[in-house]
Image (cartoon, rainbow, N blue to C red; front, side, top):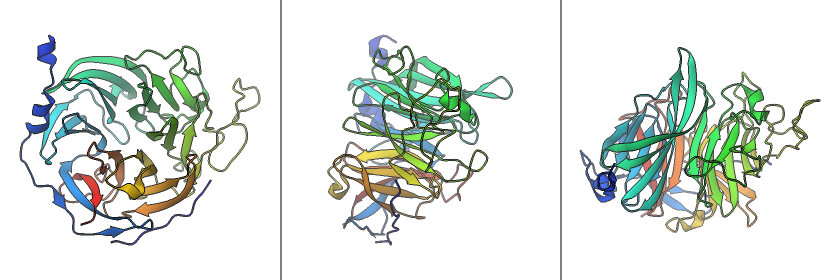
Length: 394
């Protein structure tokens, strides 16, 4: 399904592991003032918003997660975790020297799970070097302490590459852990159920495999994906965005928004974009019909982060999808009907901030997003990449 795009004009012992998140949110250096930009943006649905700069000086922020005390933890591709307080101050929370950061590899997905206000677990997905030339992706779980990670546990490891790693991490409404994996530029692996490449994985929070996964004894929840980097939910519906071919593996374009079905085959590499039918070759053991995308971008926007907004501060946007677009240098707002089907879309902030990678809803009900202009494919802007917040216009 394709919808017309509209560009809007500008208008250890437990006491030692205790996190004391109030301190985590406040023990930061160089407190800057949050800056509200003067431009008022007016959109087709009648929304009038402004954008606030929460933090500057980030280096390719890939993901973000919010602490119960109001702090924001941002993963940077180079292997750093930055802690940003509610007033915009920032300090380095930890760094992971084992991270291999190059092109589309590095420190990527992040998710938090809170057992109580003073007991918080962090899940991270990142790339490591394997031998001289190889790359592996690693999923870890750790306790989050005042000065960084404690008691790190490796949950899963699989083949990586400089490109197409996926590595988005999210905890679903079912309190299970979901992880996206790219095809690591080897497309055929996306159809191989014995490979973890080109999949959406579903795990218990301790890394074990849920008994109700669609393939017995396997973490695979869906397959046939190329490079999925965005994941969000509306009630029990799972939405996922993934990059289409970029030239070397097919004609450029065909970025997809998919609604995930347990055990679903999403076609890559044989069947993608506007093609239909089975993605199987004669003699293949997989005989499942391909699940077609619910929205397709023929001209690539390079979709990264994904959010179903549920907040109350931007009421016209409630229950709508927001796609962070790298090549599209925008947020794309996708209106959904009662069934969760796309009915309209609009491009927001086109070219205003450059490449946009992550998008999230804060506990304050506002919409946050990050830029990715230092990733080697954008135009670097002053004072590094940004963490931004969308608020109603004054």
